[in-house]
Amino acid sequence: MLQGAIIGAIVGLVVVFMAAQQRRKLLTKVLAALARGGPTAARAQLDTSVPPTQELKLRDIDKQRQRMACLAIIGDVEGLAREIELHQGPLTAVVQVNRVGHLGLALRSQGEQRDRAIAALDEIATRMEREGGALMGMVKKQTRAIATVGRGLLGQPIPTELWLPADTMSREKSAVGLIVSQALGEALAAIKRIDRAEPYFMRVRAATQAFEGRAGAA
Image (cartoon, rainbow, N blue to C red; front, side, top):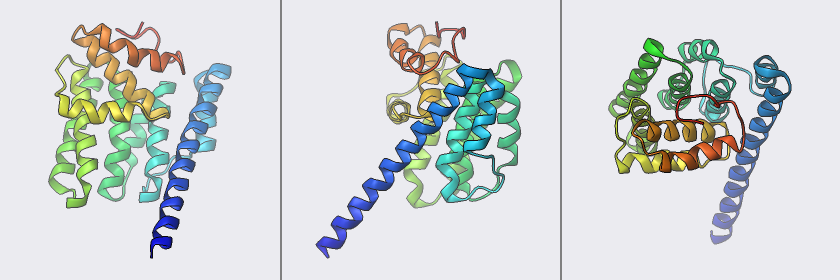
C-alpha cells in the first residue's frame, strides 16, 4: 500500500513537471516567432502548437488557457473575443479558459470593449461561485481573484485575500503567468503604487517587449 502511494506520488510529480515544461516550451516558441516575424508569425506558431478548440474538455484546460494568454501577448484582440464566444463544455473548463481570455481582452482593449471584458470577469466569477461544486473551491477563489484584478485595472483596490492567489498565478512560468503579472503591475500603477508594480513589469520585460508602451508599463 505504501509502495503504491509512493509510485502514485512520483507519477504525479512527473505529470506536473511535464506540464510545466510544455507551458515554457509553448511560450518560448510563440515569443521567438513574435520577435522574428511579428504577430502574424506568432499566431501561426500558436495555431500549430495549440490549435483552437470550440468544445472544451477537462484535459484541454491548461493548453487552451495558455492559448488565450498567448493571444493576449500577441495582441490578437479579435481572435480572443471570437474564441471566448465559441467555447462550450463543462463549466469549470469554460471558466478557467475564458477568465484568461477576458483578462487578456481587458489588458489589450480600451473603452467599452475593456469595460465589457472586466464585467464578464465578474459574471463568470459569480457564476462559478453559484454553480460550481463543493470541490471547486480553488477554481472559485482563483476566478474571483482574476475578476478583482480586472477591477484593479480601473483603479479599484485589490483585497489581500484575493491578491495572494493572483500573485501565485503570476509566478507561473508561462504565458498565463506573464499576463497576470502585467495585469497586477497595471493595477498597482493605477493606484500610484509604482514601487510595487515595477517587479511585475520587470518579470514581463525579462520575457518580452510585447506590452511596452502601455500606460504604467514603461
